[in-house]
Image (cartoon, rainbow over all chains, first blue to last red; front, side, top):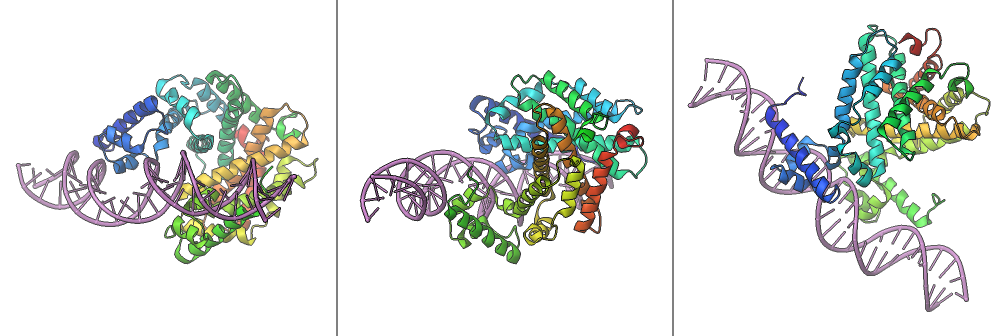
Length: 203
Length: 203
DNA sequence: CGCGGTTCCGTCAATATTGACAAAACAGCG
DNA sequence: CGCTGTTTTGTCAATATTGACGGAACCGCG
């Protein structure tokens, strides 16, 4: 019960910090920008900076978090009688890949961040996605049992979506549209996994 | 081609650092031990410490890495005509949960580490497990195609195993045997996911 | 407006981490 | 053994992060 304007004041400094950081990152690069500068630009102390963001690099991933929020909403909007995989697929396709704040920092990340750090954050997002699916499922089903099924199902779906991202990142072209297409394919692979020629029977 | 004694010398300091760290952690706790002390005890400089371990906390996760290595071997030892899920299940059950180095630091982690840090590392291990399964599959199948299937399959299996761990961590008792049992259950849930009453049909 | 409780921020002082550069130890070879 | 290229350390100096404590700003209320 406290993830709101959290007393407007706080929100203002958060925004100021983000804005200051983006400006610096844009003009002089991520690594060349010190947390000190960001805080200073935003008119606060270094300590305050760390009260709002766990680390300097986390500023680069704010878009993922907001994307996740969008996803939760999209999922909630799907009809309850639709298969969960289908709901996720629909949400993936409806995703506003080209919206500004979401792709704004992608270039910086790709260019300057240690790939391992990016991958680590993607894993975090995958987990959050799984949680979102999990919550959605729990809300739809009322039964408190079937815990294992819900856990496995939601994680598998997240695994399919991010498996697509794994493959996507290894390719040349890399348009966001391709990513959605790939997700579609991996979700289908998941659905058909146990069909006569499905992967779980075949392997 | 260089993950060997890497010039014995280096390996010796690595061992010395690990030994020194464990001793300190044991006697005065993790957070109360400074990287400086560890390095000093091992007879090297602070900088050298960081050349061997990415961070102080990484010392606590060495066992997971060795466990993964064990897992790869166990997987490779399974017959090629066995279903991949069955191979993983067998490996999970054969796992030497009670071996010393593996559980040695578990208590410290649970007691002093920020849960988020532990979870983050578990995600890392999950990814590594998926990679191990993935490689095993690629070695068994010869076909270079079916890339998506392999990615999704391996990730789903890892998801099932770590989904079990997620559930396990939320419970009271927590014996390692229970964990293996839970993994068995989640893998079964995965196998039956598309059965008549399976989760992917039911949801 | 003044009061008491909360939340947010500044100050200080330890660590924790990392990049750059040079000395030391080591390996293979003539 | 002495020479030479490679690997591992030490040294120095910036950051990056975090815990502890006190002051400032803000909130609802009388």
